[in-house]
Amino acid sequence: MPLSLQARYGLLRVRDEHPGFPQPAWRLDPDPRISDTELLIDVERLNVDSASFRQLAEEAGGDPDRVAGRIREIVAERGKLHNPVTGSGGMLIGAVREVGSVFAESRPVRVGTRVASLISLTLTPLTLERIVDVDMHHGQVQVEGTAVLFESSPFAELPTDIPEPIALAALDVAGAPSRTRVMVHRGDAVLLLGGGGTSGLLSLHEARRAAGPEGLIMVVDRAAALADVRTTGLADVLVEADATDAVATVEAVLAAGGREADVTLNMVNVGGTELATILLTRESGTVLFFSMATSFTAAALGAEGLGRATTMLIGNGHMPDTGAIALGVLRECAPVRAVFERRYLGAGARS
Ligand code: NAP
Image (spheres, rainbow, N blue to C red):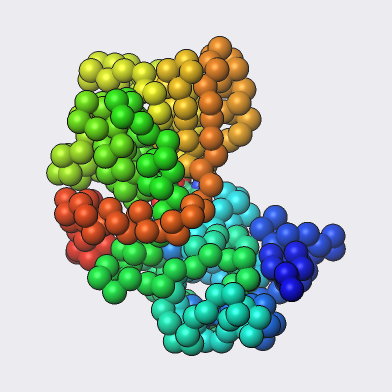
């Protein structure tokens, strides 16, 4: 018999005065005693969404203990890691501790299997017993705690051939390279804003593959990541610009030999980049706003004000490949994998 909406989507975990779905809810019940339709994970590591971690780090003045304290507070108050300022979450890895009998019928998984959740921490019931370490460079937090997945929650078994911090980071943004593969067509000019980050590098590989050798790929980013992007050999035009300054960014792209793109992927982790994104996309082109720092009103009213009929898509984090494309990039593309290994397994400093 099909499950009720309440059981399938975790509505029974919502503890708000006016209950609804878990993602928009203020508070969830994170009790580790699961129902038949749920799965319990012993959580080991959180990958905090980049926009959220940046905000937490700024608020804490870069102090890891204060970041840990704020994470503890949010989880204690909300029963989930749902940053009230950015509205974003992240995802987690851990080992399966218990599988509800109804869950097991449709999603067979063994106790002890190491998994990555592929749904946002903004709707995942979470308890934290201990925060062991906060990696300020990569927004990953080593913890001891529990998380509950619902029957509808996608998850993936952790690969054994990719180091866990790298797999976790890639799976967090897996929707970006998957969506890029679908959106970009042969011969397209593609612009990646914030293209030197985690989602940017994975999507750059997919954009190059889909656009083909003639496709012009421009990457706009800040100095630190440009050298990394250059080592991949995947981008034709590299531009260093602050995308919050729309005029300067457009001028810099044009001066470097770039042009308006057919498809633009916005992957920055700060707000205020909507106008640069729209201005650098051709009149009837398409934008993917993958960034969680995107403002719907700034994008919609910005395009209107600029007289652009741009198609604008919101970066849905879920794609049916459940991370296979993102992990595939790390397996197939040695230069991109090398950048990830330097960043996540190197001396610690973000390159
Ligand atoms: P990331 O690795 O931190 O990359 C962000 C990139 O943006 C970095 O290269 C950063 O450069 C660049 N950047 C920051 N400020 C900039 C500016 N003013 N001008 C130009 N570039 C700038 O982040 P990520 O993990 O790839 O995530 C990217 C975005 O996707 C974030 O907003 C994240 O919240 C969002 N996200 C969305 C979903 C979804 O489902 N839609 C899922 C996961 C994450 P520096 O390193 O030099 O600062």
